[in-house]
Amino acid sequence: MDFKEIRSGARACVPMLIGVIPFGLVAGVTPVAKGLGFWSAMGMSTIIFAGASQLALVDVLASGGSALIAALAAWTINLRMLLYSASAAPYLAKESLPKRLAVSYLLFDQNYAISVAHWSNRPAKAKAEFALGGGVLLGSAWIICTLVGALLGTAVPEWLPLDFAVPLVFLVLLVPAVVTKPALMAATVGGIGAVVAAEVGASHSSVIIGALLGIAAGTWADWYLETKAGPGMQAGETGTSA
Image (tube, rainbow, N blue to C red; front, side, top):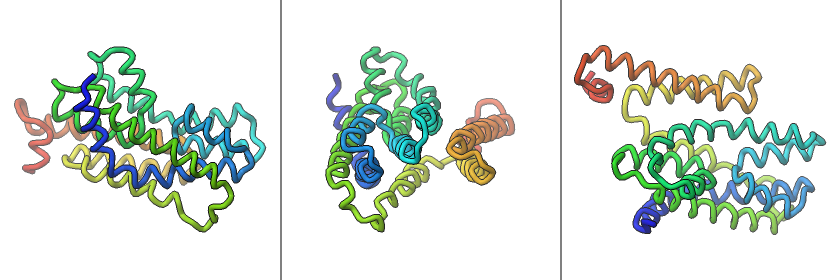
């Protein structure tokens, strides 16, 4: 076990706590406020371990929906994790099965984005411990904040905007990653595609639709720039010089 990489991954994810803490409180407060109880809140934060999916599940159950519909709603929102896993798999191919399973359990949006960026700069030294360090930090904060939120229950006033930091965290993750023209194309098309899909009624599937459109646009831009630059040049080189 490489503890240096674990500490490095944890340090890299410290700024992400600004979004995880209020979101974790919401994940604890909401089930209790909706009448599902303390243990439901804690069970979801340790088993499902995904904020948006948990809140969707609570919303369906609290409004009288069936467990099957609630599970499908949570599963649909978390489909993006399939894309995350496919993206991270090449970097972790040489890691042991227990380490890969641990990374998959502790996979958050934040530590996925930070880990892939870290591994991309040092593919020969990619290690699961980096993602595990960030995952343990964020996961611990998530469960602790859920516990606090569940204990507070209905004592938290509804006007307190605890979920304001969630979109801000995604913006913090997105902006540093947009460093080439293909990345800019992917971010723009993916964002617009997700918004349009949501407006026409795709609901939670809009996230997946936007992600697929962004991947297709980024891949096309990368291919186009490499073809335009000719053999021996990288798309990123073209993107910075054109």
